[in-house]
Length: 503
Image (cartoon, rainbow, N blue to C red):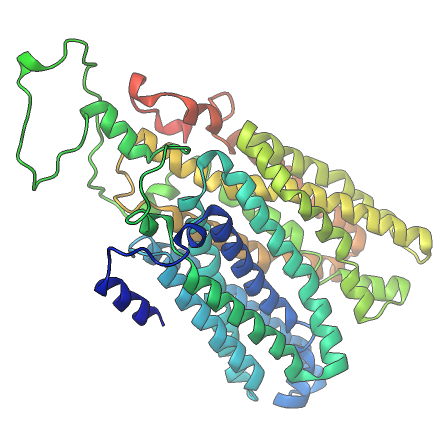
């Protein structure tokens, strides 16, 4: 289908695709990326309650070995996500289209779902999980980069809030639907839901038209979002650009305006290192990645603990073990509001407050130590408050990646080359988040098993305190310097590029 579309474009490139205005709109692209994230997380979570039964009834694994192989399959997914994210980011920043990598990721997701659905050996299940991890790397890396390409810079936090919300909804409903459908309709019915979502995702990704592609047909509109940082600086410093194919009309010094500002120092556009090394040289980005790893650890540490704990304490089964995550996930619906706050005031305050607010609720988990309605209410209340705190930390960190790229482009024009580095940066973010997904369940499970529920709570509280300290000092730039919002508001043409330390 993609080949047909490209062939059609080559036959009549002057004719705009049908419904171009809607297919390239901010709302449609945001919806497509959010649904892509939802689909990816949903397909990851929907088979979680099914895998143990598939291992015994379809693969023939002994009951005593089920826990081992479940852990292996979880680790394989995390390892694929961890390893593929930076590679996907690099490749996406060196292709002309974001849509093509997204379609490749979707094909990987389709292949992984087929293998998990039909596989009857451990090797096929492991390959399926590897492909699923690769698909997640593509969706998160390229999808978030596509949003950064599309959304006005002053709205990026709000947009990332919707993506965060779609992820949380998928985390919530996938295991519940997977368990219920498996119990009522059988193994294959679980995957029928998955294939239905994949078909919807295919349609949306094929229909989508990127903003930069749509510009060749859509007439220029009055600019409502900040122009490209490097282009703005170049035009302020040197005037309109002249291509090599145009005849030179360089004005003589006598004809130059007397009021011309002194030329700014333009950093060479030819970079010595790939963007990934430039990004990793930024203390501010490293702080954002470290905080993302901590946030992911705090969020996923409960996966291996809560279902077993409520079963032991309250006698709940698999349905109750899934529903207990509801209070933790529901507060994510405020993520767009937190993103709006981050857009207006910068990411430092909401991120720091999020980690700080998590501390007392993590410590207070020790009070949930016996059965009873009052204990159930207390646990749900603590999980809800913890969910709000973790949402406050997560959404600004997603937007912070874009803030950093924008400021670096303004202070060092051309440092990331012509195509930029959004996908590379989000690949690094995805790597950090995947690291937390690996550390979190191990932390929660091993600490609870070895030292108890109370110890798990206060050790996670210490980790949250570390996150708050790093966020307060470095997220949004080194404390005491101008925030990301203030840096972007400065007319850099008047005072030259900013110091690297601000980034």
